[in-house]
Length: 378
Image (cartoon, rainbow, N blue to C red; front, side, top):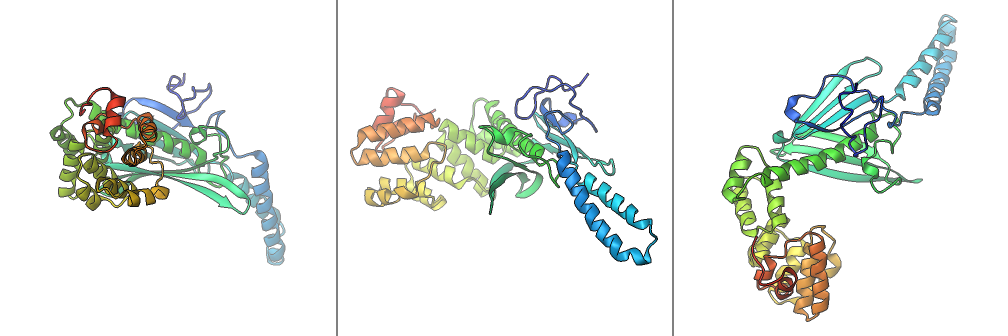
């Protein structure tokens, strides 16, 4: 019986009968397995027979040409042998590298096996060994249009890469394309779609792991966070993100200051935003020159013309900051209905309005009405 029959695939799909996992099992250090996948599955797209035959034919034609050119000096039997050998190599080259992957509560375990040599290699990531992660999506556009998207996920510690996963997928299939390992057919690459699914699922799991390190601690004091960071149980970046989500601006500022004093880089935009919420625009501008910070600082100084002139530069940040800046600007201009609508947008983005309601920002009275009462700093 498959030991991972109860464990879903990385995109949440149930395990299929016949999925084959191979190689060394995942170590206990990555925690309980929450998802797993294998290229030896009915779900996985293998290289098509047509593509493999095509590669074999091309290799054979090239070999035949070489044999024709060198036949005068080689035994006659060498020509057919070279053609057959090239065909076999062409067939094998197009075959994807076999791979299985496991994502646990505390890390990941990747196993690959070469079809040519049978050699098995493994890679492991323990979330505690990284202090931040990055993820980038690159859409490939050629003369014939879109040809796929590359995802690159990297985990770092002290700005040095400790683990990376690179894969490719096709965005044109459905809403959750990136998580589907069947979207891209492997071709001259070790299971690119499988790796894309791993990269995206692993980033999501790492983010939850970081958030849990903060959520598990009560009370959520800056001293507690400092201790967690020192112990490697939570990253500075994750702690700052969590404090931002909670609207704990004073704690965020204090933690960011401690990190900067220790030479640890922090998210300048979030730190500057916290300073704005604490009504310190001058220090905020010293931390970041992002358009969001410049616009809100201009509003604080009563320079509504400069703030309004920067509106075309605004982009949706996904955290509600843009909506709050727009709300402050509209409220300062007297458009209370528009400002209220912007604050509702911020609330839909899970922006913490409670502390805003206690400040002197132009949108504060409207925030108080939305949160009910005078607001509270949570």
